[in-house]
Length: 181
Image (cartoon, rainbow, N blue to C red; front, side, top):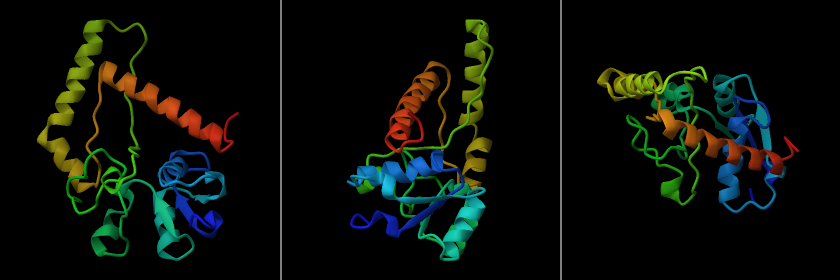
């Protein structure tokens, strides 16, 4: 791939410049690729389409959420090279992290719950405590395993600090590939 980055196509469930695209580039950049703009990425309509393109031989690999390919993993139709999480994903402990393989990349898909700017500190803390309680519950953990979702919970100030870092990293990489100026 390094000799001819355009010879391989990756698919993903986001448009060019979206998170699935950026995840491929983060790993390749960490692997020593000097011009990541030459790597082919095909943005598709979700992870289901992306994995179908890979299984059909139209792309050589795909990036997306493990939850989108759980059935394909369980049937043996695809093999996962790595998860881009801090720890191995429960229920899929045989799949190593990128970090374990020498690539310092952690790139999890996440969702946030936001509250109005003027919320009281007490209410802000109460929301954080409730969300943490859900994340700590066995019911939530079981649902995460059943759906191939990596445990990932940050609340309050920890979440805001983490989001700030993600934004900075995304802006830097997006400028490098020309998605933003």
